[in-house]
Image (cartoon, rainbow, N blue to C red; front, side):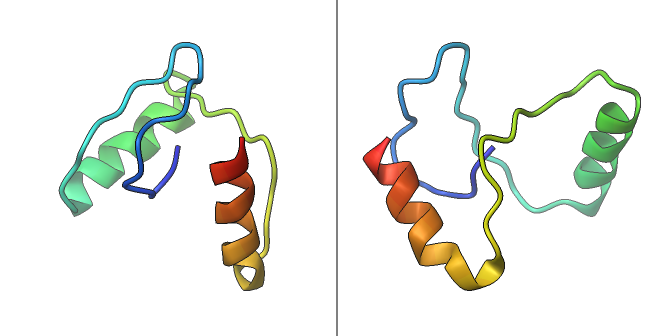
Length: 61
């Protein structure tokens, strides 16, 4: 998952979807995650102070 609007990287099984901000839809996503029906893979964790570095690493992938 990414908040970037750049082209989707070549990641097997990845899909791109544009969404509008919605409290109700976010709650639905939380329910799906909590139920184990939606899972995300986390490659790395970055502190908010390293946002630039995180985006540079993603772009270089």
